Image (cartoon, rainbow, N blue to C red):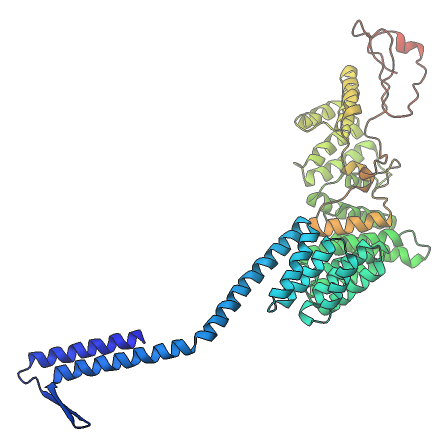
Length: 488
């Protein structure tokens, strides 16, 4: 309207100017009801323009007056909408803060104001009741959501969480399954079903679920691959001790597949190497361990590598261990293995030299025990004794805790495998259940026949330093008391 008026004014101004500059300004006559008006053309144009603008203004004024009730209604609706949004926001903040009574009050107020957002009102009502501890009202609110297609997924999730809080795992699983069947991207439902299958040690069902999640793009490929490797290893650990002859063959194939998918998953690799070696495929087992050492060294790997052959001399075994360490020579585990290799070969100077690379490493019980062995082999009895003393108070290594006192690696229960599978799938890191339970592992500190020498006025009687709980000091032979630093 304003633009049209501006255009008309400009056109009239141009016309009037043109007439004023011409020699003949023109004449205009208007006859109406016996009246006659004569004027120049320019004046007539200006009068016509004025009456046109006046008529437009009058017409717009009439329309504005007629539209007043509608404008008032829109203003009231906008104010109501702003108020309802504010109430909803305050309600959700109250839920987040754990103020259940305030959340309930705001949810009731939101139900009166937010008629255009029934979904948010229902979610707030359910969460407010849950925050207030009114589980019956919360369950009723979540159940009401199931009647609306767009809110069904939220309803199932809320009912699942309520069921878990009440200890009804079967009901929670049912809601998770229904939600997983309705939505292609319900990751929480997939996770709940996966945990239930892992709890039941249903490794095959868990593998199928991981494949379905990958097809639906619920999880990225790397997570699915790590999950498959861990689940295959868990299944192999269960089948390895099954009475059926075919079960062991299936366990070997599953472990080999787990090692192929994730060479950095030490439990699967160690199991694959052990089963392959038992079938006479020592070369393939060695290659599997070397590939894993290249990806993620773990002490259980070199112990399994050491035990692949039993018909070799110490120097031959040490040479093999050196070949394994050379696969990843700069890793901390390789530095430790170089010391072990020299000790196996009986080369004390080489062990001392290799131990120098560990001087900047944090002192753990395992490092202290290894340094004590290297010092003792070189004849440094006092130094070995000091390392043993440090090892008694040094922290253990998590990876070393995966070895039980008999040297078996990853001898876990089904519940441990379940936790291990989920953690490795999501983070790519190993859990250490034995360390969490503070169970005893393979000895880190050696039992060395080291007696305290008369090195100071406070040490008058030679005694053995205790290296483990329950250790019984043997009776010292006469030659042990013949002088400082004497050895058994």
